[in-house]
Amino acid sequence: MKASLEQLDSGLNQSLIFRHFSLPYFDAPYHFHPEYELTLIIKSEGKRYIGNHVADFGAGDLVLIGPNLPHCWKNETIGMEDSAQAIVIQFKADFLGGDFFKIAEMQNIGHLLDKASSGVVITGATKKRIAREIRFLLNVPPIQRVLGLLDLLNTIASAPQDIQVLEHQAQTYQLAKVDLERINKVYAYVIENYTQEVHLETAAYLANMTETAFCRYFKKVTKKTFLDVVTEYRIKHACNLLVNTDKQVAEVCFESGFGNVSHFNKQFKTITGQSPLGYRKLFQTV
Image (cartoon, rainbow, N blue to C red; front, side, top):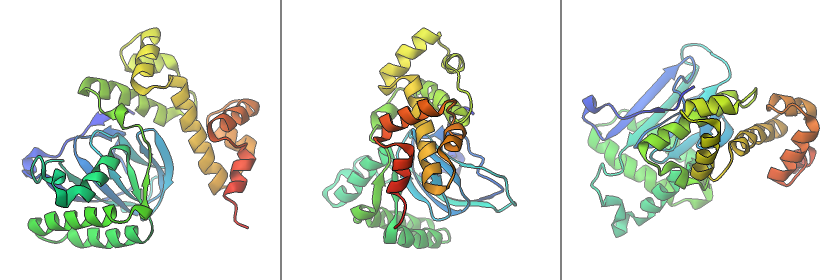
């Protein structure tokens, strides 16, 4: 899987686009684009990847993504022709003018868009309200969509209790286009393979570098080693399994890409501060 650059279709002559997808599965690769994106999952489940954050998703999942933040939704199975449904809104930062979101009246929304550079998940009552409004805006004239989008963003920005910022690593995605494409090819490879074998040699090849040069380059850009990133994806996958299934620790270990339970336990505690069983207990209801 290769991270690809996606852009709005210039032939549509629009800076604000609403799209309704109905597919057997979400087939968009790990990709990025210069527009903001607000995505509502109508129907489907699987894994959501935003930057280097991984989590389960299901119907009702609602996420705001900033420019050039790579992302994808991956289904674990292929269903009927309408098994994966989503409404996606994409808009350019300057679609209302270069400084529109900097004026005093738009300050609240401006702060929200800043947070979107790391990915924002909307939850609670705000998510339900936004989901209803997005469905309504699918079938209204363009000018009403513009006004509706401003209302959506203001509603989200006015409910900080229902906002979860995914990753505070926006600097990773403020790179030159060539660097962004190179790094995201590597992230795409990791996402596709982290539950199995991941090879440094392959990652270096994707970046068109020697292994030594790639290791230096990757650490400089991401502030982490390549192995650190692979391990983080595996631990996040393990966290999801521990919370959402009753699988034994050894089973979680191997399904997350680790080959040794002792090593898994050590890495898990280093990253989360808890043992696998201790982490599971934190989420068990009394």
